[in-house]
Image (cartoon, rainbow over all chains, first blue to last red; front, side):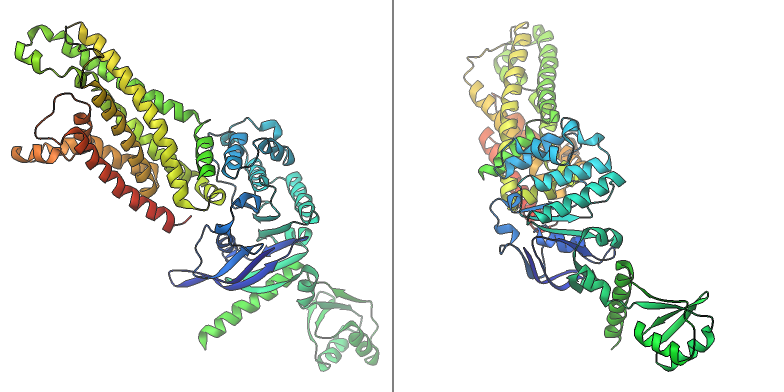
Length: 302
Length: 255
């Protein structure tokens, strides 16, 4: 469990993370979503004690990162694919991490096998591809077998096979009962991997809920096709719908499917199609972040 | 602290750069000592009786240790700056969030290695220097009464330089800047001092780290310079100031 409360970070007077509060629960993959520059990485670094917060606290199972006596055994983190001296071999990199937290030396080989790097354990990291470095970073996060994981953009640099691997891998970690927070700017990826979401924009919390609830909050439209499209358009407008033409179809917002059906029948229009258009996670994200951006500008203006 | 030391030791152990730096330091010390001793021994026949009496056989044999200093400084500097350059420092702080403890562990492990390397360099340089000096009848041998102090002074000098390197690395963070600063202090400053009016040169040069090092390893003391251990105390003060500044920066500034 990760708890963040009132976390704030300012750089040169500008708030990059602004009074952010949320909880990350064990047992599910939680996506930490926001556009680039929205404060995801800064938030992760504050949880990890790498960046000093100006206000607020972040705790891991009730304790601050600095107060953990063997932090790698409480929280595993992938902060970027760097962080490795290129003249060191993969297993050497993991061995000094193990030594730092009193973890058995043999654990280095174990985690290399888990991420599928056991065959290159003795090779220098300088010759690794971005995807291999990413896997090594994940191995490093797992070195202390931690119950909580924070992975910042874990699919960066991975090939399609690696992406599929890490999806299943993160879900497996959550199924073990671990707390898994995955920061990403790729909504499509989060739609496939995460079941809970924390969405931020400009350093503020936009949503903290399940993926399904989040998508449902987004406005969905209904697609209508009819040979009497002009008559139908007038009738629906009178009922208060907002609509627009999309080729030979109408996209209707603001009325339920039932209301549209009744209106069409009263207007004597034949319907060829009446289908709800589900908003994707991406649409939901765009709508909600767009709202906060406008909200923020309005607030500044007043 | 135990785990921090274990971490730094595990980092130090496999990196071939460590052994290469140490080998370089010893090789520099031995070869420069050999050259100096050879030059002195070849002109021994022209030396007057007074010259022979005041000849500093120990100091000349250890001359090469002054050449090893830059390698030892670089060893200290790179232990920090390479971690900043590769982003490894953030991973280090994830494993050991108490940053001053990390700095302390780095100091102890690297000072230990520098001490061993320094002892090796001093003993090897002395052995080679004496062998070559004996060809001109100028050797004093292992029983010279000033030898233990000179060898000890040399080792302490190299340890202080290594710690200074770590402190500089923590302060400026980039390899190039820190190495240029250390080269300035150890190599360029002694040259610049020569520009001063003659009356001030000796007054000023006693404060130079390189001069302190030379004095620490010589048997005959220059009356204008600090006594060997006083000089090393002055150097230790420089190191302490840099270390406080470097430690402060490490704790205060990100990552």
